Image (cartoon, rainbow, N blue to C red; front, side, top):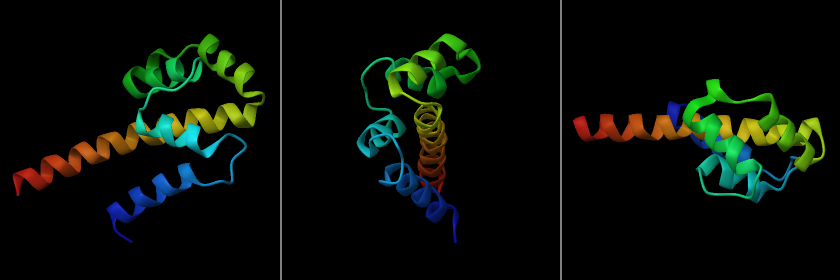
Length: 98
């Protein structure tokens, strides 16, 4: 299995209907699309400056999502999305370089 296959598998896992949160929410977060608050604030912070995520941001998502597991899915969707965004940028750069 190649690197692109693994990236595609991550995208599919985020979009799967096996989570406690809505798959469309997880997919939108992973894609970097705007979503409802407080999810959007945390997802953007994870994507842009993960070292600045606060306990309050995580707590707000946990409260809105209703459980630790749901909050974990939101956080992981943002993390996977951030990683895949960087992967896609790398692929575009290496393809352009030949």
